[in-house]
Image 1: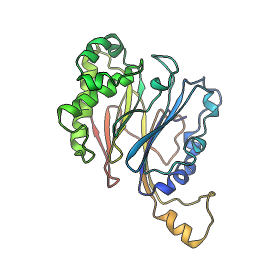
Image 2 (image 1 turned 45 degrees about the vertical axis):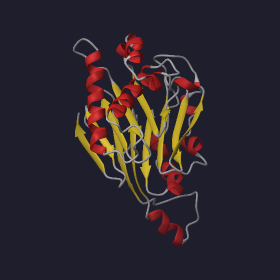
Image 3 (image 1 turned 180 degrees about the horizontal axis):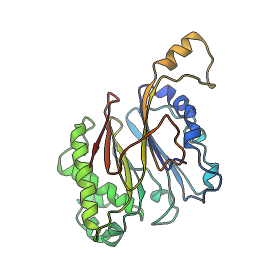
Image 4 (image 1 turned 90 degrees about the vertical axis):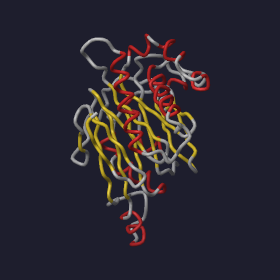
Length: 270
C-alpha cells in the first residue's frame, strides 16, 4: 500500500497516465484494516482543490479512480488511519490554507497535549482556520506560522531552500515538544503548487523519477501519442509503501527532500 503520495510533473494531461503506470506499487493489501478517509489535493489554474471521502476498506482504494478526471501538474493524496479525531471532512488530509496543501502520516501526542498552548501562540487569522481535531492540522499551522513570520505565506515563488529550513526547524520544534529520548514517527509532504517539500522520521519514504510513459493502455499507440508520452517527466514521493518495486528508491531515515519547479529532486539529512 501507499499511505501518502506526492507527484509533480511537466504535463497535467498525462498525470492520470503516469499514476496508472505505477498503480501496482500503490495498491493496498487485501488484508489491510479499514481506514478513516481518503483525500486528494491538486491544483487547477494555481488554485488548490480538494476531494475527500469517508471510510472504506483499504483494498477498495483504487488510485486510478481517485484521480480520474484530474488534470494537474501537482498531486497530493493521503489515506488516513485515525490516531486522533474521528471521521470528519475537516480531519481528512490534505489540509489547505490559501495556496498551501499539507499531509502527514504519524502520531504527534505532544501536539495534542499542548493544543491550547499552540493555538494561543498563533496569529488570530491562523488560529481561526483550525477546524478539526488532529495533531496533523496543528503541525501544518506551525509551519504556516513560520512562513508568516518570514513574510512568505502568500509567496508562490518562495525560495525552496527557505522551505527546507522551515521544515527542518519545524521537525526540530516538534521533537523538542516530545519529552524523552524517542522522537515521534512522522512523514510530511507540503506544496504550494510550485514546489514540494517532504520529511521522514521513523516512517519509510520512497521516490521515483519518471522519464517518459512507455506503455499507456489509456491512449492509442500512434507515433504522435508515443512522442507525447515520451516527453513526460515527473517525480513521485510515496510514504509507507509496502511493495514499491524496483522503480522506487527508499531514502534514509531522517531525510529532507524537495522537488523544485524545474522538477529537480534533492535529498539531504534533517
